[in-house]
Length: 549
Image (cartoon, rainbow, N blue to C red; front, side, top):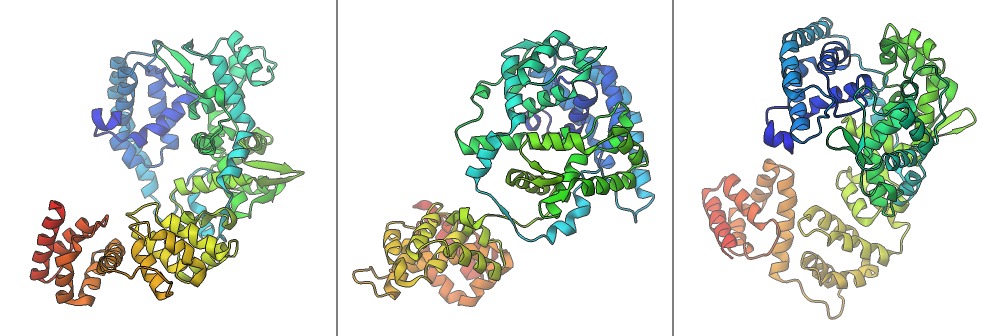
């Protein structure tokens, strides 16, 4: 919202990678920025991780400038930071060199057009074809997933850490917490104190990962004057409402990256970047489980192929899978059965969301036994007819016909504007015969369903059922036109041509009176696209009348 109003020319998506690597490499505090760190971030770190050098050359510095301005204007730029003016001056100083680095990256990538752009170990794109060929993945109901999320130990630790932080805790300029505070935080989260001769704050990466998770979960937020504070409802975790639980869990889903190995050498660390995601995608492709040794061999080969330092990094990490497995177990996404690594239902849900975030197609659907009627109707609208029929058949097997009819029609009545859901529901319920009569009779009370109910009850010759009226017929026509319009202009025009200009004209004289959610936009569309000028003119007159009612 702030960016749209105050920096409309900036691209907020370019800020994310810069802010993430600033936090990982330079300052655990989101609100502490130094000129030297900013220079190193842009000239050393970002050229190694940027995905689109062209976009970065054009937009990253303006985006970072807008972000720093936002921090300053909202009181989130800590007192330990350099001034906004100094930071902006640094952006000016590095601009030419940053653009040159991005252009060098572009030259490198354009030098070999036949080679795919290399990502890290967590890049899902190379697996897109395999993901598309997977059998349908069935996702567990929200109630079951929420219960699993409530048990995630890492979220409980993030809560405990945030509660310990309290309201308005001052954080340091060089390190967030003093060594004494670190020891208190370790005790609050149940983490062991490391054996170290140096500062404790520099030997507790797990604590800082949990701190970052607390920020991701919105348990902690930056305050004014270099402080952080716990959010009001944090202590209430695990929340009672399933939707609130899953919303919170999804906020922290990208914390899977905190499971990647952290080595003393930054270049070696980068060579194993994305390892945790790489493990997750390989588990999904394998049907949900793989032997740990097989995963290790596969990922070690991938690391060596992707980066010339991959083999050295793998050896230096000792057991690179260990931190990834520990984090994913802590977030409720995997479990270990001996030497077998297995996705949990919550983990499967999470990986599917990560794949979807990467704009890659995967066939994931709710489990049939937990699918609501509305979910079934919405899903089936996107499936080929044969697959949709199979989903309906499997769903219907779990219910008595009368109950199925009731659920489907209730779902269809939820949104008067959704003609496709309504038509689908009526079509399926229409196959249930006399078992659906009570549901049809109840549907007579719903204006959007009455035309369908009256039609089917009349066909079933139900005693006392109302006969369909002309208004009912006109409603059905408007539903059909709405669906046709949703398929595109050419399809809509073709449907109008099928009934001929005379019939359309006759309909236009009366159809504007129907209180249908889409009548005005349909009349407007007819006035614009109908090839017969007289029909278009009649549509404009009808639209005027509809808007005058």
